[in-house]
Length: 138
Image 1: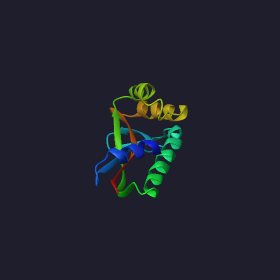
Image 2: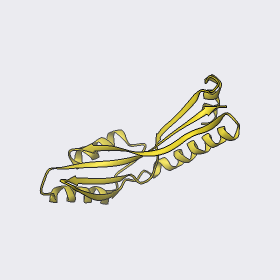
Image 3: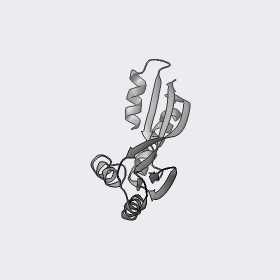
Image 4: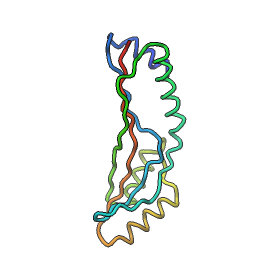
């Protein structure tokens, strides 16, 4: 990753900006929504991404230590995904998030129970933590 940042520094014009936007592993919550109620089912297992998060953070820190970039801003926010059904959510995650998160069996079972016991139509959501930072070329 440091090599990629070195190449970015090489091709970026003086005073140019590098933007770091990525999901961050924090045990993203799975929730069932019904009416005004938010019913927590439990966290996703996103531990597979922890090593990548650490490697990315370390590479950026090394690039700043090398004097290539200076941190301009850094924040986090939640990006929320919604599905009409628990099974629709589960199918989507199995197809698209294999390398970033899985739904533990007990969390999936609880989400299904919550959705089935709700008196009204429900939605399922996941609130995924995102990192947004910008760095200036020095």
